[in-house]
Length: 284
Image (cartoon, rainbow, N blue to C red):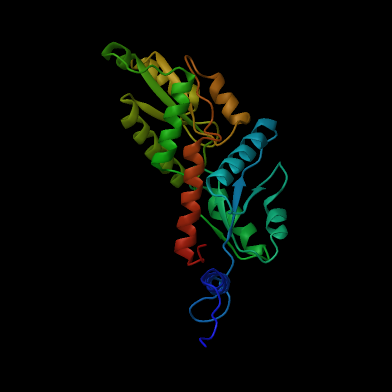
């Protein structure tokens, strides 16, 4: 008599169950292997991104940098994004770094040029932190800043398209905080040249403090050259005392600060990735 065999549906069910079990084990093993470097040991954790804001007594500044932090988080889900201030607002940068525990960090300054904070203050705070922290380069100069400045001017009423007569009458003052460091002025001038190329009109850098020309002096100089429609481009990350003072000097239109613009969020992430690559930190 021929031996009986299990039915074909039951055989397929057992095979399918075995295949699912092997796939599950394989996926779990692959997940564990991703945490191990080729030389053995676990891969270092991906660095946290710490936004370093200056701080301001203007409550709008804190609201703006928080909004920028949230926008960055939306663009890069899963990346830990924190905020720390140099002064005036909480959390202060040393407190943010202390709260990270053993997680390494990349500090991305929300500053637009080289200067004392970039060269001294922030590196000193990073050096005294228990956590391993690297400082990224400042945001400027960069084409994404020019993109943001252009959009803010459009929002304020900058005319486009512009006929020849209007173009001859128009100019822009790029209003920045100012610094005694000559590298800061160099960086700001580069941004002004790039914005002038984008707009097709003169763009003059001017400063709220520590450098010349002042914004009112730049406006007067442009008027003396026949440029009577002068707009103020606010080269500040967020609202504050200096940004407000510069806007008040506008004879025509004044743009808002850079703020939580999508191009700003992309630029922050670019500076973060540049630092991760340069420092050899492990990518996710």
